[in-house]
Picture 1 (cartoon, rainbow, N blue to C red):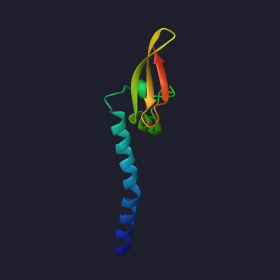
Picture 2 (tube, one colour; picture 1 turned 90 degrees about the vertical axis):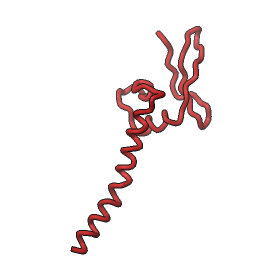
Picture 3 (cartoon, one colour; picture 1 turned 135 degrees about the vertical axis):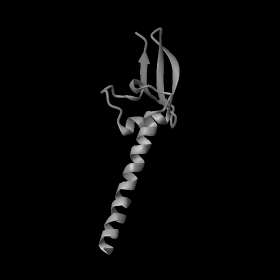
Picture 4 (tube, rainbow, N blue to C red; picture 1 turned 60 degrees about the vertical axis):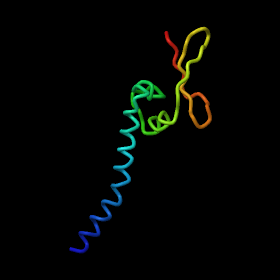
Amino acid sequence: MRANKFFIVIGISVSLPFVFLVVLYIMSLIDPRFTWNEMDLNGDGIVSFSEADYVGSSGVRRIVVDGKECLEYFAYKDGLPVKTVCEN
């Protein structure tokens, strides 16, 4: 009986961080500032945890490139561009 409680405590201790990361990932995905395509930085159709986390700590600014208006996604930590999307 005592061994069962031990395994339950170990199971909860191991699964709790995983559940926390899944909840954090879902919260990043529902960020209203960005669409799914904007969060998909590498354009593979999947928003990974690292992409969702990175976009969560970034901003958007309008820039002009070759006479076209573009959106530049940049990291808050250093202001460097992450992704630039121009209108066709």
